[in-house]
Length: 464
Image 1 (cartoon, rainbow, N blue to C red):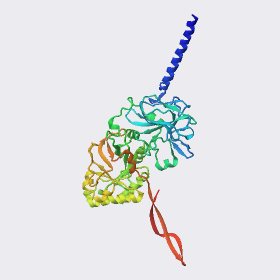
Image 2 (cartoon, helix red, strand yellow; image 1 turned 30 degrees about the vertical axis):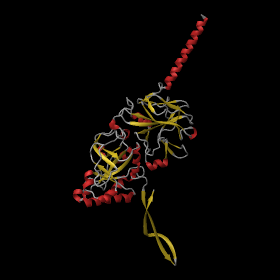
Image 3 (cartoon, rainbow, N blue to C red; image 1 turned 90 degrees about the vertical axis):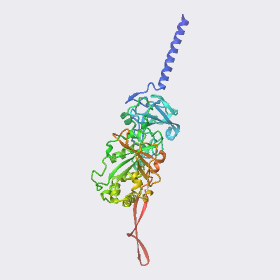
Image 4 (spheres, rainbow, N blue to C red; image 1 turned 135 degrees about the vertical axis):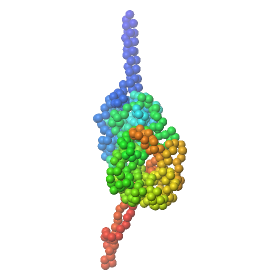
């Protein structure tokens, strides 16, 4: 009997050990992860995100005044971090600069998740050991463990949309204040807590409708909008795979500044598209048919949109759809050229021409082919090619006026960029120009020359 009693105690101890191991295994699989933020699983067990640096806080990671692009979650070295929902790890790296102790290299990963309406976004997990390899993940899976960065924490960032930030720096944790003030946006990184509070996870993970993807044929897709579209949810637009947008700023009718000629949602749309990492540019709807001066309309456009004709934005556009009946081909082409050259003179940036295939082939002359073309021809079929008229090719093609895009009520124009997504930035403004006046007059007095600032003027183009 005594031997049996000893054996029973050993069996009991073994059962406790097995239960403990099972519980630890369940914990490692995320069974104890918190689900308390609109259906998303919190990325750390504590869920504490108010102790360290928040999104948008200013701090000095390298001694430079910088803006934080993520949310820090409190934790201890060795604590697991969890997948928000079903998704896919698309980048995994054990040696990312700045994510190790003392700013050395450390582990980080980027996972792709989907919201309940089919929009996709990327989540950055930084300051972790043993980052999960690339591949499918399930809600609550352990994606790594907080490393011994001081203080130990998880850097958690969210980037709306499928594409990486426009600067190509996928591991971006902060942006210097100087850079932020110059660009006016955060490369598409957004407040992660606000995003998770606003959107819920998809029930079926990565099942995204085809019409919401970058496109089955791999084209780089965009949209163009005006006040007609009303309020736009740019998070959802970017999340549906759209990489760029053009926004109407002004119209030639009433170019002196009445409400009908200036788009009321222009600033909101420009800032909204930029904030989610889309490349965005401004356009002007021309009215040469009203007898307006091209130079006057151009200066009116620059007055309204000038803050967005600078580095980080797409080049501006002249939308020419009317005027051939009243001016004729030659005069209309001269009007278009004058508008473009006035904008160049005012900003140093060369605009593109938007027009229909009909106008491009029949109402504009060859003198305008030196400018880049954005052509409108509604085939509703991206596998075809547009008619570019007298131009050899186009940069952008508006292929539909009946698009359905998440975040926008009603129809919207759909566009395709002619190159790869990585080449889209070639049509962003790289440098801005201003005109500086240098004046010098030489007066000769008793054989000596004295330089004085007066009548003889010279204008030079100075790059910012």
